[in-house]
Amino acid sequence: MPKVSVIGAGNVGSEVARRIVEKDLADVVLVDIVEGVPQGKALDILQSAPVEGFDKKIEGSNDYAMIQDSDIVVVTAGLARKPGMTREDLVMKNGQIIKEVSKNIKKHAPKSMVVMVTNPLDVMAQLCWKTTGFENNRVIGMAGILDTSRFICFLSAETKVPADKIEAVVLGGHGDAMVPLIDYTFIDGRPVKEVIAEETLAAIVQRTRDGGAEIVKLLKTGSAYYAPSSSAVEMVDCILNDNKKILPCSAYLKGQYGLLDVFIGVPVKVGASGAEEIIELKLTDEEKHELHRSARVIKDTILLCEK
Image (cartoon, rainbow, N blue to C red; front, side, top):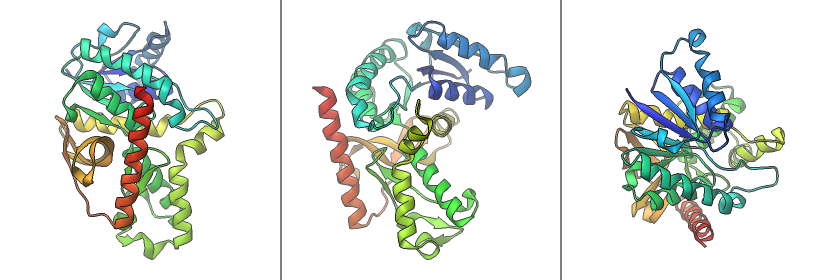
């Protein structure tokens, strides 16, 4: 029976746990340091099983030892972004949290795959990889799926074309440094530039970059969790079922796209071995420049985290 552990029982973590059991993907252990919270949320989700019709089990714990034998560990632990706070503002505090979480993953679930969700995403993925010492394919970050989903959502709203008839991909760092690939964006088979005016498209791209901040501003006391959890669970599904689907994820680059020793959003074939292959798309000079600029931001933030 597949087992997925979710570390962090906040809004994102509990939604990830709920979606996994409702989709009957795996049994789930929800872990958090706050006493009673993971136990209470897990019990609440479990009690929905007779209505929702799933038979996978879920339990909560404050003990990292409970993640033993996990196939996948999804990491959502950390502080949420508050109004006026950038992802980079989170790096020092969340960096310490992720180092501790990663040590426990290495100790209790040394054969697991890790799906990183905590922000700043690319930085936390790299920090987890370094701390665990895992092979680079076994740590993968949830970034581009969410950014691409937001981009498609806004394109659909503008054009009134259903989302399933829109193709798009967003690369680069998760957040302000993301790089939507306009030449790979199609609305019902037509290039997006033929459908949406340049000025309007630029505004949609900017709204995509500000997608998380817009929700933080509206909520005032929290950050996004429905769309992020959905994106993370798609990665879990691909790993557990060896789907080998091409997804935009934060993965470790070893020279692809001219980048070395950095986790950043790129198209990745995701299967049972995690990040099985980095897909190199042909980029325009501007897109390549933006991707490299995004990588510099990530590397600078990593240095800040490691001080």
